[in-house]
Amino acid sequence: MGKVSKRVASILYMKEHETLFSCPLCKESMHVTEDGHVTCGNRHSFDIAKQGYVNFMIKPATSMYSKSLFESRQEIINSGLYNPLQQTIAKHIGSEVRTILDTGCGEGSHLERIGNLLTQDIVAVGIDISKEGIQSAAKFYEQKIWCVGDLANSPYKKQSIDCILNILSPANYEEFSRLLKPKGKVIKVVPQSDYLKEIRKQAFANSEKESYSNEQTVQRFKEHFTNVLQERITYTMPLEPMLVPKLLEMTPLGWHLEEGISLTEITIDLDVLVGELSKV
Image (tube, rainbow, N blue to C red; front, side, top):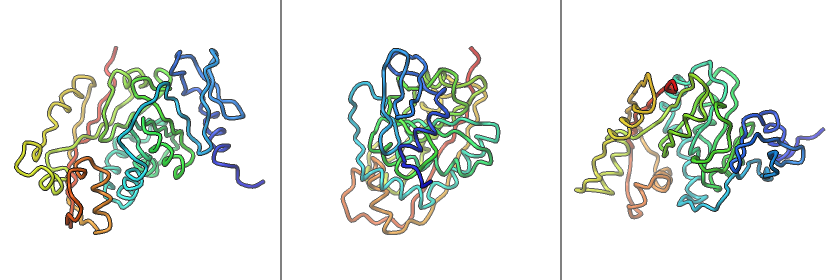
């Protein structure tokens, strides 16, 4: 028997884990059919695309992120620029977690690389509002559940997730609290003051945006979760010339710069916030 198609492989994998799904329209449980439909008892149905993902959006959404941006993001992440961050996240996930949801997963490279650092088998799920990002994730990374969806109305059951990742992406703490199992954890990554400072200095020289504070974001996280741990990761890495335009394209900071900028190194400066679900 030859290798099955990407769609068939995704159907089989999603069917195996169909208890995760909840209809974004009516919140009923969902069933994955053998022919690739994710349906609920009220006959709401979402198709598994030939690329191996499901679009759970119930109304159109526009994204400022293009296919080219996600290609650049994948190349930057797979260059190893964020390896220390991914290692730190894997450490905080630990060995007990079985189900991980990456919110705002983009093209999926962080989730893929973090999963590869874990010693246990996991069910890895990624959600993003950008269809282009999820299509890219499904193209390159198999044996995962990739969903186009709105984080404010995610297609997953209450208390179905052990660990939520939220890496340099907007959060929805009400939804996080709904999705997490008891004793579940959220790992959120936010910029610190020197994050991409080489770009920031050139994009916003002599303006208020040249400096950055994450204090309000950190405080809001601490208000929603308990036993919060905050770990700062700071390092500067050399940057190959061929990666400079890729980095500028993947970050909104770089959109303000003209072509021809010269970067020989880049600083990564991030806070990793780890919090547990507050007892209700």
